[in-house]
Image 1 (spheres, helix red, strand yellow):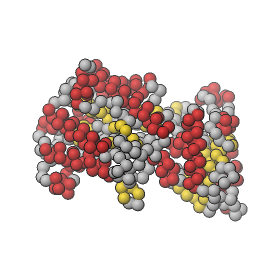
Image 2 (cartoon, helix red, strand yellow):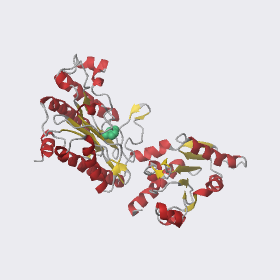
Image 3 (cartoon, protein in one colour):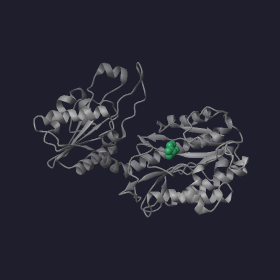
Image 4 (cartoon, rainbow, N blue to C red):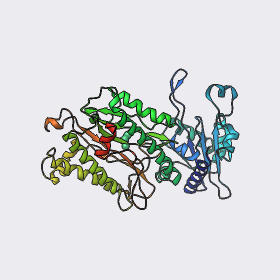
Length: 434
Ligand code: GLY
Ligand code: MN
Ligand code: MN
């Protein structure tokens, strides 16, 4: 593990232990290896909470945190070294590796967890763990606690750790910001490659291959299923079939990004396959771009979460009224929410170890104030269904979304994904290969 991540994980564990207090313990399980069939597994992706606290990338692992005023302890249950298995599946850290390379104070075989855990929980008043996320694990924790309860040495309370841990994850450290800059930069390069290559391909899947090329060469994997949507497919918000021919007069919407060191980017660009926006495509694109600019400039510590959406929504409503796609007054549009026919999703979400990252959007039922270190996507869109009889035929089947990753700072927002062009002239130039 690199030494920066090592230090980060130690600091995070110390922060979390400070939050739960010396009378408590915390138990955080890693992800399980999921079987696809027989000897074939789905690609392993570590659980984000567990990764955040350990940087440990093996299945079958459980972290235990034992805060103590005279020396807190981090303990890892993990797989033991097994040279025969390692010949098939690759190296394991083992117990000594968990201590030497991952900064654990102690490590035990995962196979012994039922015997050892009750002793570790002895005398603790609360056990914090991801209560409710996995019924089987809930039962295990109850079992470990009950075991001691019979001997009156039990934890009194089982508590969900999710809120505390996710509040920590919401504010990104310098290390995390750097990882997210890298994820965004690689992802932006993938978008640029797709724009450059569109003239050489005939099908959505071929463009998807160009994205994968960039991710794979950079040692990354997609952070989520890519959306490569030609023409009206862009109006299907979660379109992932990515297997239709591209129409040379249509737009192409690509929502795709990779994760770097488990940190996700999330970028959408929309561009004309021909290299020239038609008048209608341009009109819609300009509204979305203006909405995105307005929303990004609101992503500051002076504003709350809802203000970002409100800024985008306002520009989209005015724009759609101007070009006659919406009718009535601004107030009527807001009252009836008629704009939601064309802009039916929120303007963004937190971004981090998960693409839809953790953290509350409200505090005490009020929209959350933005803080330096938060990272969010800003992704307004307009989608006009191909069979929408309420608009002139020339507008039908146009779908545009523009999505960037934005770091809130003490000053101006930093657009992590700024390398991916979105100004009309820059997009056209790149697609045309000028
Ligand atoms: N790519 C998923 C999203 O934009 O939310
Ligand atoms: Mn997004
Ligand atoms: Mn996206």
